[in-house]
Length: 288
Ligand SMILES: C[C@](O)(CO)[C@H](O)COP(=O)(O)OP(=O)(O)OC[C@H]1O[C@@H](n2ccc(N)nc2=O)[C@H](O)[C@@H]1O
Ligand SMILES: Nc1ncnc2c1ncn2[C@@H]1O[C@H](COP(=O)(O)OP(=O)(O)OP(=O)(O)O)[C@@H](O)[C@H]1O
Image 1 (cartoon, protein in one colour):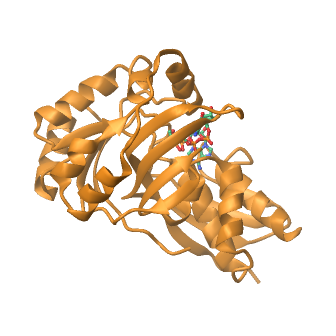
Image 2 (cartoon, rainbow, N blue to C red):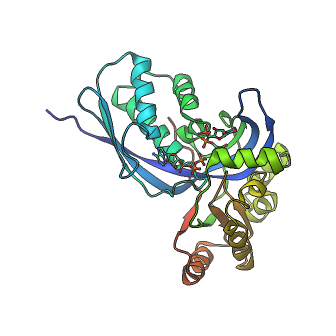
């Protein structure tokens, strides 16, 4: 008898703020970040099947998919030799700085734990997430989080208010490793004041949040994809409260004044020939 699927949404994230403090001995960078889940999501389905892991995800199918890697790690941790089948419906753009792959990996870990009756603790799931990639731990629960270390040391922040967002991705993406390499060459480290973020989030004020938007990787990614700078200016010219590149890019988000304003701005960008434009909003934390 065929086993049935379990399904979940894999939410994208934006970095409302990202400071790169410096390079570590392991080659990764020490970060401070305010990470925020958004409504834009992939759909991930998993079921027990066969003796191997299979991952179906259009052009990203196969063992290189980060969700496939996550499933292997999960089964290995439990010493299981059975297989699982993963299906991913992609909506999150690739190489956008929106943690699309990381979110699929996190969703796979969540679903497998459910499918196998919760054999792994939250702590072990976070450890497995850390082995998949720096953003995967955040994507396990999402919400509004303070991230430190490589990005995997997480702490709750006051929940962000509902922010109406316009996302726009240039045609070209950014390779995350390349953005960090550029940062090492040309970048300058800033730092975030956590208390300022806590206040702005507690005030539930989109304007106050917009005033604190910050990303040390922007300066590194703009030479790789100059359109980032132009898109940011367009979002600001359309009276978004603030605009910023997310993560390592190349996607740029604007905080709109309302849902209607976000739709109007998105329409204008589309009319100017920008194809990859989304209207979305912030999403809440989900329990693991
Ligand atoms: C830019 C961000 O999205 C901000 O949240 C993350 O820092 C990137 O997270 P990610 O894509 O999950 O990163 P990983 O897949 O773990 O690493 C990709 C590459 O990014 C660089 N990397 C990533 C995270 C970090 N703290 N320092 C780094 O230097 C490393 O060169 C690494 O080889
Ligand atoms: N499930 C997946 N979804 C998207 N990309 C994947 C997936 N699995 C593996 N990849 C590979 O990972 C690369 C980067 O993925 P992704 O789009 O998540 O980057 P990103 O948006 O820069 O993420 P981040 O914000 O975490 O740095 C892709 O170019 C692709 O080759």
